[in-house]
Image (cartoon, rainbow over all chains, first blue to last red; front, side):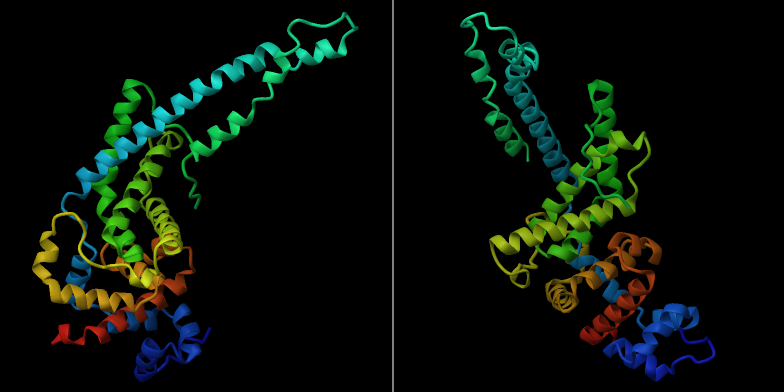
Length: 139
Length: 185
């Protein structure tokens, strides 16, 4: 940082505003409130320009109403989708809770008792592909 | 500053939902305009700016449960708006056309009094001058000139050093002065 005693000249500040050079002005301005204030004043927009900027970026008059409506619709749709997904996944969760880690695994690990009538249930647990679908839809 | 998408659930139950509805109305009333202006300065297209405002407000609304009744900070909201706008612009650029070809024409909404007062030709000149600035400089100018944010707040929103905010602002304003020199006479 250049010390406050070596301020760039007014011409140097003007040149820097347009070209960004010399780089030492950059460094000086970063630490010199006096020069920063001078640049602030030199680059101040006239009221007409500020009004033009405001007009160019002005929101439409009905922005609030339209956005309010659209946001509420989006939130309601997201909530509805979440409920549908929960209902869709509920049977899988129930099956997982009933079968659980102690269900089919326990039967397989236990002493041999011959064929089990409910043995096919473990195959249905593998329908976890639905989980993936649910996550994609949620995204 | 954390700019999560607000993964928490919004207020539930009748009372909670009413509170959330009130808060949404307040968010729009307090910040809708400035969020739109920032979005517009980045995406330029009014319809895209509308989308950015919606996305931003949804994220803000969903963040409410984590705020424990505290208002949504303006700097946070503007940072979300900027991130959302840049992300949306990137998506559209990949899908449709280059951002430089995006229209800067008036949007689908009714022309505001501000726009009517300035006039079509002047608006075109202003947009032509704005489009010669880079996106960060445009946003800094809008945040400073129209939203009244401090340099520190702008640095927070844009995520650049304070000195960069100042140098970008000064040089962007000088560029506008030069482009629109007729306006000063």
